[in-house]
Amino acid sequence: LVAHARSHGDLSYASTGNGNGTNLAMEMFLAGSAIQMVHVPYKGSAPAMQALLAGQVPVFMSDLPTVVPYARSGKVRVIAVTGDRRSPHLPDVPTFAEAGARGVEIANHFSAFVAGGTPAAVVEQLNAVLHKALADPRLQKNFSEMALEVSPSTPQELRAMVRDDSEKYGAVIRRLNLSID
Image (cartoon, rainbow, N blue to C red):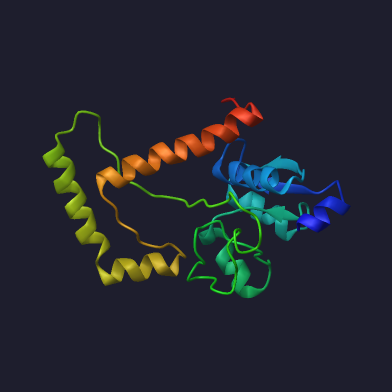
């Protein structure tokens, strides 16, 4: 992709919207690869995927639940995953780092938040209940079928992850001078 982008300066890529995670992740890849592509924002993953399938855009950085069914059917080719390790849902697909693109270690997170000032004991109790629910094999099977991985954490780990993600994405947002429309 990098070689192709360098020899064809007019490539575009789809995202799920300006400033969305797919836009920021792609911009991290582009900056680290010293290439440019034209950003084409869509209003969500479904229209962006349809644009890719229709050949309206040649590249789309998306989440696994959106891509895996199309990858398994051979309708799209996944060239790399953004995680720090390969996905069990696409085990033959390298990470960006394995493919030679550093700085694109990104993961989507679904997290539970409570209002500020919630007593620590309540937060810990809620976290324990969530951990118990997420350990249910039926729930894990359902998540796996949607190409989602269950990875419970502690409130402290979540706080650190949010801080780290804010710094990582904030740097891209400032570099691109993005603002809320």
